[in-house]
Image 1 (cartoon, rainbow, N blue to C red):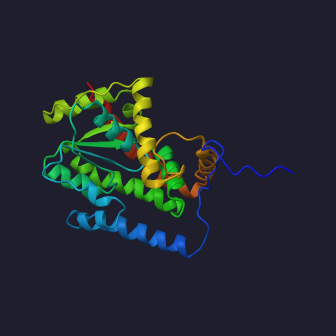
Image 2: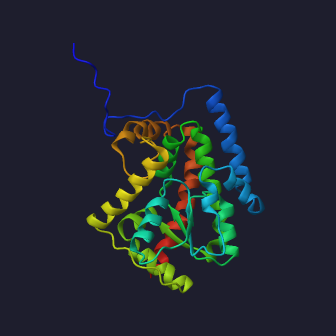
Image 3: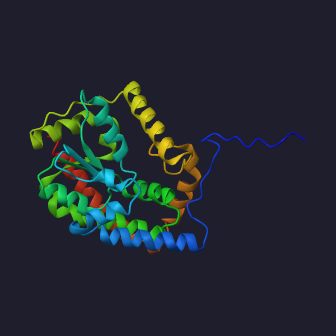
Length: 262
C-alpha cells in the first residue's frame, strides 16, 4: 500500500467552525470577553493593544496618516495593502484594532478615518471560522455592538462597504480625500492589481501566522464547508431577532456609504 500523502494544498484542507470543548476554548473565550470590554474604553486602548498580538504596531500616533477600521473579515487588510500599494511613498496607517475605542480616538483626534462594513451574515460567518473558540451568539453580539457604538461618531469618518473596497477602492480613496483634504493615491481595482495585493497579503500572513488557512484574509475554498454549516445554524429562530438588528445596522452604514459617493 502506498504511503499516505500528508501534503495538502489549501483547497484540500477543511476547517471546523468550532474549537473542541476544553480548557483552551474556555480560556480563549474569557480572554476575548475581557479584550472586548477593555476595547470599548478609549482610555484603555493602549492596554487592549498590548494584550493583542502585534497590537502595539496598531497604535495611533502623531505620525499616523490614516486609520482603517472595521470588524474582522470586512476588507481591512485588502484596504490597507491597496492603499500602500498605490502610494509612491510609505504611508503610516493604523488598522486592525477591531474595537470601537480605536475609531473614537481617531475621530476625536481628527485623523482621516475609514470604517469598513460587510454584510453581517458574511462577516459573522468568516469571523467565527477565524475564531472557532468563540460562540456564534457572541460573534453576532460583538458585530452589532461595534457598529452601534461608533455610529454616533459617523460625521468623523468615511464609510465603505466590503463590496466597494474589493471592486472600486479608487472611489473610496476619492471620498477620503474629499472629506479630509488629503491626497492619498488612487488604487485601481483590476485583476493584475488585485493579485499584487493578495500576493503581499499571502506573503505577510504566512510569515506571521504560518499555514493557518482559516484566518488568512483572502478568499479560500477551504472555508466553504464551515461557512455552509454556519449558514444553516443561523437559520435557528433564536438568532432571528439579533440578525434582524444586525441587518438594520448594516443598512444604515450602506446607505451612508452610497450617499457619500454622490
